[in-house]
Amino acid sequence: MRPSETIHGELCVGNVPLSRLAERVGQTPFYAYDRQLLVQRVASVRAALPAGVGLHYAVKANPMPALVGFMRPLVDGLDVASAGEMAVALDAGADPQDVSFAGPGKREAEITQAVAAGVLINLESPREVELLARASQRLGLPARVAVRVNPDFDLRGAGMRMGGGAKPFGVDAEQVPALLKALGDAALQFEGFHLYPGSQNLNGESIAEALRECLLLVKRLAASAPAPVRQVNFGGGWGIPYFPGEKALDLAPVTAALAEIQHRMASDMPGARLVLELGRYLVGEAGVYVARVLDRKLSRGQVFLVTDGGLHHHLAASGNFGQVIRRNYPVAIGTRMDATEREKASVVGPLCTPLDMLADRAELAPAQPGDLVVVYQSGAYGPSASPQAFLGHPRCAEVLV
Image (cartoon, rainbow, N blue to C red; front, side, top):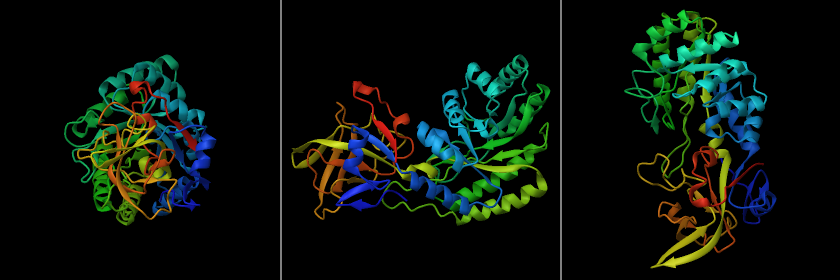
């Protein structure tokens, strides 16, 4: 589900032809996010979730304030990973009751801000219990807390494994009972658990299996909780296809597992709400990155399209954001969508490093200076995950269309 409409051979984003959109933005490169695709994706997820399952947006996937503000009424809550993201969420009008704050290295000032705001704080170490207790006492506010658990299993097929084994995230499952006692002794307001085994998974059966294991673990840990469990956040990890051969996630096994979990929670943890936090899956396919071709060069038989964008704006597409083996994101010449001729060309940026490559020998319509290159699947982990100050080149723009 990505921009696909064309007018007069140009890709359209939000029904606006690409060259016109570039004039509207006033510069290249830029990211463009399609509002209608965001609405459609949230609706499709809602249709797959059993009634009562909460849907949160993970702001870290794309913290653009306008996009967060647009997403806020579409979802049930926002999950943040810093005081900066918390400010974006609250400025967007989010109810603090529906905001949760995770992260393995929260600064004391951030913890105080979170308590003062009244958001739910996901505990990730015994140190945070002490800091929260001090902040609660000083502010006269009971800190709302959940325990982020590092499970004793991982998510098979995950692009990044966030749980299982030795990890900096959360509290090892075997250490959780002691932490629960400590937060009870500190009179913190316990509300539940948070588990996030992994991310970017395209295997529905694997996600379903992890969800069932998460439930068994939470049920075991709940026996040591100082108060009834009110919320269980099982994270997300739902992936989107980026590369040839990858298929879209089949949600049928996930839906079945969630329905089963809902039924079990109703009897084992009455009153507890199941929540999923999705980031990339909600916004990733709704965005494109657009750069302008500055030069067309031929070097020993190989065509290079030199653009005004690159890894400093889109680190992930360059292959330097977690890829073990570099593969091309889907790329097109957005101003020549009706061209039938194809050539192999490498799309590179203006930086003085061979790492600055957006596409390596991709099959593209022949392009000339002035044409606009489009990188699809760019709605998540774009500008905020890229080294925009590198070598002093201009920052990119963002637009919600």
